[in-house]
Image (tube, rainbow over all chains, first blue to last red; front, side):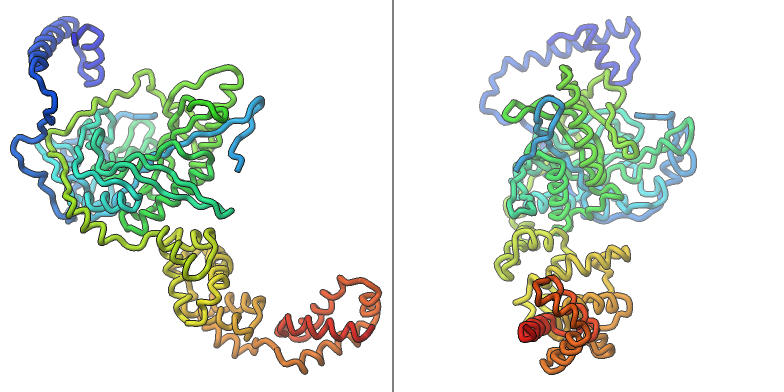
Length: 95
Length: 491
C-alpha cells in the first residue's frame, strides 16, 4: 500500500487536521516509510496463528453496577469554552 | 396473504430490516459509575470518563454484560464466549471521545430469532443477525438558541444494546409487530424499560422495494424513530418515494434519511458528500470480553418465563386461541393481571375466554377512557374475578355486568356489593317472567297479530319491552323461550 496526496488529504479531513503542502509532503514520506517497515512483517508465515489480543493474559476487569450520585455539572463545565444554562454551548450543528 | 403495494405501473414488495437501540436497564453507565437516571438537570451525571478527559480509562459494568447475555437468550440467540470492543470514529458535538465504543467484528450475541403472531392465527419468524453492546452519545438541543447548539452529556456513555434483524420484514405492520415483540421480550426480561417516549427504545429502519421475486433493491436507512406509529408512517412514505422514482425510470441512491414527524416525510441527511468512514479498530483501552459457559448457564437459569412460553402455556391450560394468548402475553402486566384474575376463583378456569374478553375489551376500554394503566386499575383482579363469576353463574346478565364494572371502576366497591345494593340479580323465576310477558302481550295485541302474520322481527321488540319492565334483569334465555312458547300458543 502506498500513501499518495489523495489519501493523505482524506486522512487529514477525517481527523479534522489542516495540512499545508509542505506538511502533506512530509507526512506522505513518513507514513510510507512506516508502512514499508510494517510491510516486512508480511514475510512471516502466520497461517494457523490466532491474532494476539492480549500479552498479559489478564482478563478484562469489571465493576459492579453501582452509581455515584454526585452532581458533576459544575466540575464538568469548568473547562468548557462556552456554556449556557448548564449546557455546553457549541456552534450550531444542524443536520 | 398479499403483502404487495400498488404503484402506477407495477406491484411492489417492501423489504425491511430494523436496527433497534435498546437502553440497558442499569444503575450506572457502561464504562463509568455515573448514574443513568432520566430527566436529571443537564450535565449532572457526567464522570471524567464520559466527558473524555485525557487519561481516563473505561471499566466495564458487569451487570450490563449480564443484561446483554440475558437478552440474547430471550432472542433465542447464540451467546459468544469471546467478543471485542471497537472504536467507531466520527466527529460530533455530543460525542466527546471522538469515537463511540461499540462492537464490530465480534459482537457479544450472534444469530437468533423472534416470532410474530398475526390476527388470523398464523405466525412468522424474523431472524436476528446480532446484538452488540455500545455507548450512547450525549444529547444535542438545536432549538434552544438561534446561534448555538446545547449539549447535555448525561446520556453519554449509557449502555445500549443494538439488535439487528435480517431484512425479513415485508410490511409496515410486520415492522410494528416485530418491535412490539422485541419490546415485550425486553420488558419480561427486565433488561430495558421499553419506554419509547424517553428514547430507551428507538429504531433505525432499512428499507428497499422490489418487484416480487427480484433481487433486493438499493436500500435507504431512516434514522432514529421512537414510536411504532412513526416507524409505520416513515416506511409507508419512503416506500412510496422509492416506487415513484423507480417507475419514472430513475434509480435509488443509497442514503441516510431523517423522518420529519410533523410533515410525515423523509429527507436525506445533509453532509453526505462525505460518506461515513468509521475506521473501526479494536479499542486498546479494553481487553476482549470473555464469558464462560458456566457464567452463561447461571444467567440462563435466572431467566423468567418469556412471552412465547407463557403464551403456549395459556393455550394449553385454558384452551385459548393463539391470538388471544398473544394479546394477553404482549405485556407482562397484562399476563400477570390475567393470572391473578383467573386464579382468584377455581371455577373461573372453565371460563377463560370470558375472562380474556372482560380484561382486553371491557376493562381496557375503561382504562383507556380514564387514561390509566393496568397497573393502576381501580378494579383489582380479585374483584374482576368476582364479577365474572356472577356472570358465569347467571346471577347477573352480561349487559348489566358492564354497568356494574363501570360502577366498580368509579366507586371502588365490589361487584357483590353493587349487585346486592341495587338488586341487580337476574330474574330466573319462571313465574315472574311469565307474568311480565303476559303483560307485554296484552298491551301490544296489534303487534302480536302482525308478528303472527309473519313479521318475525317483532320478537326483538317484545323482548325489549319485557326487559324494560324487569329493568334488564330477566334472564335473556328464559325470557326468549317463554316468549316464543306463549306467542305460538296465541296462534
